[in-house]
Length: 196
Image 1: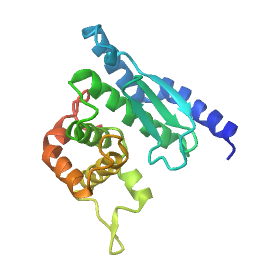
Image 2: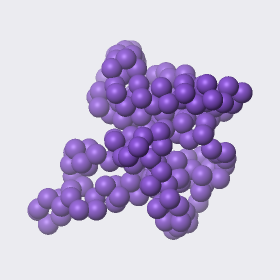
Image 3: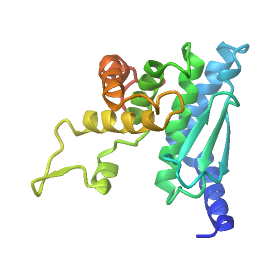
């Protein structure tokens, strides 16, 4: 697909889900509520969301840039509306984490926690997504038990491997970081009451 069509498709998804996605609108509302409580914290403002072309070797469909408080959707990697919605939700959760807690983007333990929360809460590990990835079948039969947590761990590690502060860490060290914070961060479902 040419770049003009990719940009137009991404912009269509972006505008649609800003208006119609219960998950995206809930997260934006949570950011607005946080901004009202913490008006002097610029990280609590709703981030700018925009579609941009990403490098061909990029490992993500979206990026939250803390330095500019922006969410960038990789227009050349967004393949469908569900992927766009999940990416927007995932990145909005990172923005929310930057607002509500002290967050050091250079601290891989902080990154691990935010990636666990985003994988857990954004829809990235819904059973339907895992089914499309072929991750629910073992030995030719469907297995669901424990798959959500397994997905959250796997997706958090994948995200950490592409994060600027963590990508040069050895894989075993990233696994240790995820393991260290997993239970606490998985249980933290804010701003939701439970896993959506």
